[in-house]
Image (cartoon, rainbow, N blue to C red; front, side, top):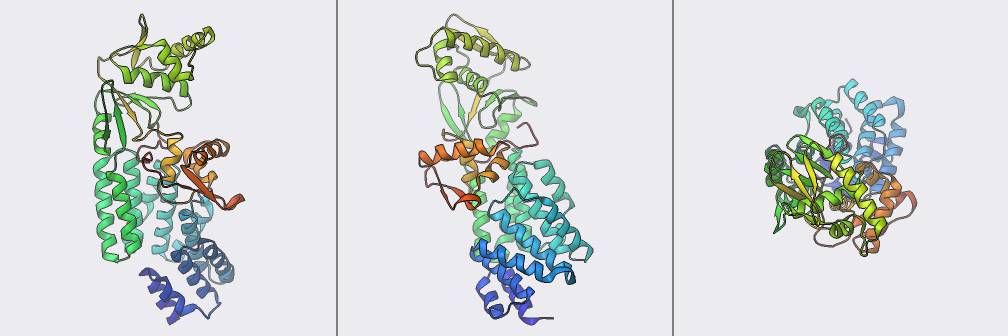
Length: 406
């Protein structure tokens, strides 16, 4: 047993990278390089950390496949922190299988937790839950247990299940406190603050108010017709009509929902849907077409009736109508919501998480940068985007998932 490597590993587990570096600073063997790579990652030098881990993995080679697989898992964790979400999961899964084959159940379980966390970030909630179900949580060390509980909480939050999310966050807080690792405790505290933050804004004809996630959950469980401008759907109970790819229809139904039970004039609808300040006959013709499309799209939920001035929304069940909007109105709220986690994102990672094209994300980032709400550093593939210090960012609590309609 290499006592120096063993001592360095214990220092890393305790969150003390400087102590680990002191024990391996003069060594260049594979094990020492791996320790230095993990230590540099804990210190925030992710680029150098990835280089060291790759060199260590090559040095281990076929003579020590388990150690090489551990390096792959460590590099995958760095990729997750640096929001390199486009990486294939095949390499991590192969490393996980190697670790299981060699009896390293702890690091294999940690690899599964990392994969679940990546799937959560890109909105594949069902897949993330399936991976977590395969993870043997009993063999995870406390630090990895915290990560697992944060993934469990994240899945519950994205599905608007308040109590399971709160329970998972509380478990994460209790475990983190036992580790006495300040960075880990701070990460959990940040997650709990985000959970308690307003998740949406309820807009009616006469008022607006902020809702926390629990209040949103109660609203979604009611028989209210909800125009959800956070997830771009119209719904009543379990019946959901997605409008994410039809922004004009979403703008029209939102205007109608905000005015309900009153009608909305044609001039107002033209302005909300097309930005038309001075409507001509072509605008009116287009409005008639889009109203017909909206009437057909929401037919299972509500009728759309013409009035002397414009149109009015009439739910079939006679229920109330509510509009859910982001806590703060802004351009490209879904991009701002992801940037609001404090991490540096690449445009490709944002595109993957939002299930849109990289070009669409790049245009959004350019507009946000022009408005002073986002900024970038680095060039080319190393370019990363972060949120500027602007108050009132939209929340990520109600971002739509890739594998669910809401």
